[in-house]
Structures are given as C-alpha cells and as structure tokens.
Image (cartoon, rainbow, N blue to C red; front, side, top):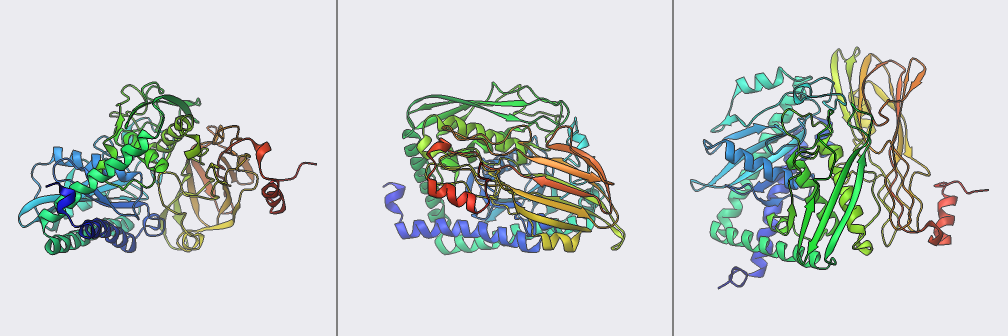
Length: 551
C-alpha cells in the first residue's frame, strides 16, 4: 500500500500544519525574548526542523527568513558531519560561513531532538546579532580582505551540554563582541526557542505517533516535489542566460558579474553560475550555502505555491561555481553575501527566466537590504551602542500590475524597525522617512518606489558603515520597461557633504552631534513598454506626485 493511501488526508494536513506550528512557535519565542531590535522588531531570524542525518528541511515556519531555507539545511548537515558526540539536551553554536553559513552576524544554533531515546531530528535556528566584533560596529565592513577582519568566527561548539550552558563559552563569545549585555539576551532567546520547539514537537509525536508523523513527512516531500516538477515542466525546454551586476567588492571599484546559465529539460532545471567573476578581494564573496539557497529562493518566488520542504528542491540542480566569487573558501571575506550577493543571484535568475516565461515573471526588485551600521558612545546613557538598520525598496512591475512600494528585501520577510523604537534606544533622530518619488522604473506596469530617510546624530559620537547595492545602476526592467532609480548615500559631516567612493559602500564615517546620513533606496524596474501604460493609471501617478508631468 502506498504512503498516500495509508494516510488519512485530514491527518496528513493536520500533521503538516502541526509541524509548521512548531516552527512558528519557535519563531515567536525567539522574537519576543530577544534583546536586539533587529530580531524582536525586524524578525531577522529563522527556526526549523531538519533531518537527523542529512539535515534536510522538514519544516520551516511561515515567519522565518526565507533565505535560510537552503542555508539551514547546509548548516545542520555540516554540524552532523562535524559532531558525532551529540546528546539529548545539547545545543551547538556555530557561525562559520564555510560550514553552511552566511555572514558572521547570522549566528546559528542546532539542537539534536531525541524522542523515546532515539535521535529523531534537529531543531535549528538563526538569529542576526547586531555585532560579532570585527573592524566596524555591526560587522558590515566594506573593506575587509579576510574573514578574520569581519568578526568572531565560531566553529560548531557545544554551548549547552546535556541541558547545562557552558559559562566559559559564553565568556569567550561576549569578550569578543561589542555591547555584550544585549548579546547574552539574544543567546538565551535562541536557546529558549529551541526548548519550546522540543516541547511542542514531543506533544505532536505523542499524539499521532512517530510512524504516522514520519510517513506524513515522506508523503509531504513527495507532493512538494511533484508540484515543483509540474511547474518546471511548464517552462519551455531550452537554455536561458542572464547577467546581473554588483556595484563593486568594496576594494576594487569595478562591477562584479553574476552570470547564470539555465537549462530546462522536462521537469528538471539546471543552474550554472561558473561564468561569474573570479573571487574578489573585498567582502562580496558568497559561500556555497548562500549561493545554493539564493537559487532555491528564486525558484520559490517564481512558484510560490510549492510547499516548503526538502522535496521541492529535488528537481533543482545547482552546479558548484568553483573559482568564482560565488563559491567563497577560507579566508575570503563574506560580510555581504547573505544580504546583498544573494539578491543579485536571484535577480540574474529572474532575468533569465523572463526570457522563457515572461507572463509569470516580474522586473527586478530593489535588490538590496540597505545595510547601515551605526556605532558609538551615548554620553547621556553612559554606554556604547550599536544600531544595525536595513530598509525597503521598490518591487518590479509584473504582468498584471505595478510593483510594491517599500517592500522588504527579496531574501526575507523582515520589516524595517520602527523609528520610534530606534529613537528611544539610540541618540538619533529620523528627520524624515518618506516615499522616494520617481524612483519606480516606468513601464506598462511601473516599478514600486523606494524610500528616502535622513538620520541625524543628536549627541555623542558615532561611526557609520554602509554595505548596500544597486548604486551604480538601478534594478533593470524587462520587456521594454525602464530601470528603477539607483541607491544613493549622502553623509553630512560638520556641514561638509560627502558620498562614498564606491557609491553603495563605505565605512568609518565619523559623526558628531548634528551630523546626518541620508539614504535613497532603489525603485523597482518597469514591466513592458511605458507607451502602453493605461492613461488613467498614468494620470493617477501624476496626481499623486509619483512622477512629474513633462511640460
């Protein structure tokens, strides 16, 4: 008898939702108990359930950051390979980019989950810590030339041994990062999330039995693979290529190329990124886990109805792009891989597939997280601070409408932190935060708009660092649509206005009280010929001040 026939459809659905609920509850515990606003307010974290030996994705919550869909599989797999001494109650701490990681600020924890004395799965999570040491506050150095300049690199180590947290490990970690009192709160929040997951997963297994739950997981993977294959089969067989560009690597002020070649053959799709630029000197190299996950996530954007588990990845084949900046090896710096390079990889995939299925694609989104790090000393509070901030931008126009304005980055569901929270915690003022007019690329369906904001330092001193993208060119349109406006950065220091040499990247801009930073985030690209735009929609754009009407 097949698995599908032996499982009641209602039970299968209940188990599927039950697994997701375990992950959702882990996400909520992680969010509500974290000290850092980037986790508690922006949701820059993820929790999931992964296979006991291979780390394959069983379930990830709807509230988790999508880029970690593929990354956490690799993290968990690497932990399984590195540690054969895991016991019930252990928690492994790791952020090594070359062992299934991203950048150093994404700190992972892996807890082996035992049920009735047997290793049943792993519960794993990621939280973006606002700082892990390194050259600049916040970790987003744009001039690092090796991983050791970017912060504390942690191999898979036992933070918790059979339920007891190792205080020596905690001391070592906290001694190497700034604002340690916040980090201990984030550490305990991640552990608490895993503990909640273990409790809820035990309840699910107790109720339905592990044989039934395992059969359901297997059937859910089969169904997910079947749906993904059906979507791929709808793409005309053939070869499709595109190139996306990074502004620079932060060291050499020249663009980097991301070249993707896609071959569709029946219900399988193959990706080759080996024509991309060579490994770069600066921190825009991408580790394999991030590169792989970026392709997976691009496919999920194109076909969002595919259920999320290991099955949906089986028809998607990605060749390892050795000897390119998309396959970083020690000691290459990687600070920008997860937040920036990932989105350029996705952009290349979108542009390539637009040649095959334009009726299902969209013009390029803003494609940058707009990473801003600001650290300094607040004399009123008498302590140091670090603020990590990211902002939204425009999404590309699509086949049936205009792009979203001020959307989150394509790798996440994270939202910008409320300005009221940031003004309460840090010595700064947001002087304005508004829609960036005229930033959406024109087209039959225009791109969404980016945002414009200005931050003024109120007291004390600070240092600002930027690791952004799309400063050299805006997000491209498709089918005749125009590109969105590029990213811009302006810094006022003692009344002198400056811009970074690398346009979207720079670090150690010293600020004093009264100095300010102003950011314009990119708009999305346009879809289709602007001459075909509906006159009524064009009139609304002019009336709302989105564009200035030509005389």
